[in-house]
Structures are given as structure tokens and as C-alpha cells.
Length: 205
Image 1 (cartoon, rainbow, N blue to C red):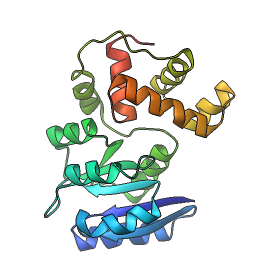
Image 2: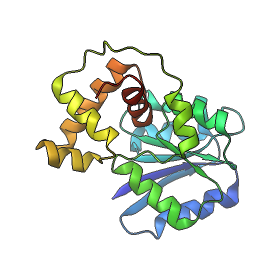
Image 3: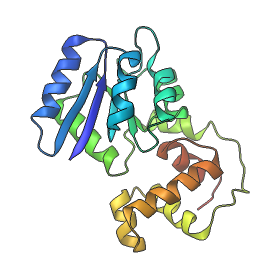
């Protein structure tokens, strides 16, 4: 069961998303909030797998809210909701730790597909945004990655999900997540998309 939370100030979009997740098999909405400030207490206790968050919110914006939430939601993936492709804002969100993003006009099927993709270790974004992320890194070949961490990183670059990496390397999904945390720390990145971009730019794998 994938546990999802929504932070979106537009009540129509927020309720439509909540109802979508409630009627989707193997998915549940554990909370739908208008503002980041309203979500903190609940999400600290419930720790959802994925949070869909409007990138522009009243009060604390989505990017700042995500940074604060990630302090105590280390395992949670964030998908930012945008109007059209707000490239610079999306790029800033990805640099701050978002896993991917969705246009608010995305179909219900696309929304569900993206959440499942993120849950399985994917990072939904367009090639334009991926190039922005890729171009943001300075070359730093001395990463200090272990051999196993390089194996995991190479698998991420190849587009494998956490489950696929675990199967291929004969380790558990929990061990994959442990290695990925080490990769993030050593590469000074905050998301899978950043890790893949830096690996490609620096020819790490």
C-alpha cells in the first residue's frame, strides 16, 4: 500500500487528488492539506511514502516546506505540482531534494503512474529539466564511493528501480536505500535525479 499526502491550496485540485488516491487500488491518501504549516504535525507522525506538493503555496512555499519536511521524512519522496513547466522553479525544487514533478493538468493515469514510478525508485521529469540538473554540477571525480555504492549508482543511471537493483545485486530493498543514502552524502546531492545527473557529468560510473 502506497501512502500519499497532498499539499495544495486549490481546494478543487486537492479534493480531486484525495478522491483519486482513495479509489486507487494499493494506494491511500493519509492527508490533504491547504498549506505546509497545516501538514507538519500530521506528517511527522504518519510518514507517507510520497507527498504531492504545490510548488507555489500561500505562506511557506513548496520548496521551503519540502526542505523542512525532509528533516524528519528522510524516506519520503516529493513530487512537485506545477502550472505548465516552470523550469527554474522545478530545477530549484529538484536541487532541494524533490524526486520529480507533475503538471497540474496531468491526467489521472499519469498521476498514478508517476507516483508508482517514484515509489519504485524512478524520477519523473522532462529531458529539458534533466539537462538543467546535469549542467549544474561541477566536476568532482574524488567521490569516495565504495564498490557496492558504485554498483547501485550505475543501476540508478540505467533506470532500474529499487526493487530491480535489489534483485540484480542480490540484496534487500532496505540495503539499497542504505547505499543510496551513502551515495547522496558523498556526492552532496539530495535526490535520485541529482545523483544520476552528477554520475553522468563526472563519469563516475
